[in-house]
Image (cartoon, rainbow, N blue to C red; front, side):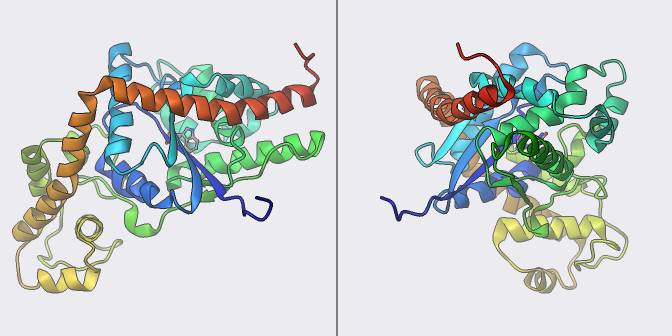
Length: 335
Ligand code: TRP
């Protein structure tokens, strides 16, 4: 037993704030499935983060359950990965509060996402939206995670998490493992189909820019047919000069495993119409089995419940140990 090397631990999360996008699938979930053998993996549904923006309660519940099913359907085996819902593990709220008291107003004010989201939700700039990075730091530090797979937009939040952890450790000794961001290779960054300078996002106002993981094939095809390209009529990879075409090439490449050179050769002398149709079809076929499996799982509520219950139990076991340690360090009287 003694010479068994401890696997490194991974934690990541996605907010159940809507239907999962092709961007979250290609940029995150698809890659997660491959990590289970090498790492000890925890994947959270960050529902406590989601309520920083007003939600319709029934929708939040439905999105959360659907996301559990979609995680499993995407190949995240619940026997090999800990899949859990953040609000099922009270330790997140407990450590979140403590870390609020070790996070500075000034550093929170510098968070780009806070500035963006408060501009978008001017009528609801609540304290949770502001202190969100401290809760996210708690999410990560509770599990003593080594690596945090995130997109570029979350890198700043992992950095502030490291700052908070270092600050806390500086006062109380080695309590928290200092995590590293784990940014996927460039190929997986999926941009909007209608404004390819921006990340594909479910909060995009133009719904034609965003493809959903569980969307019907005919809707996926329609969106790809409408995708923005350029007037060169040439399929060539050049993200700065040809952002629309390059984004479609990236999607096609991840969906089919073909290299950019192969794709350029395949569409040499052919119009964008053919190209967009091929990309659409590759995405439809990539997502079809996942959609079908998600639907099958959603019909088996008892199974889904057993998955998130077991996940919450495993997650709580690890998280509660960290909370106990932290409570002792800060001087709370033991019960
Ligand atoms: N803030 C992340 C997002 O909006 C979601 C998230 C919450 C997260 N807690 C996390 C991601 C911990 C990684 C680790 O996308």
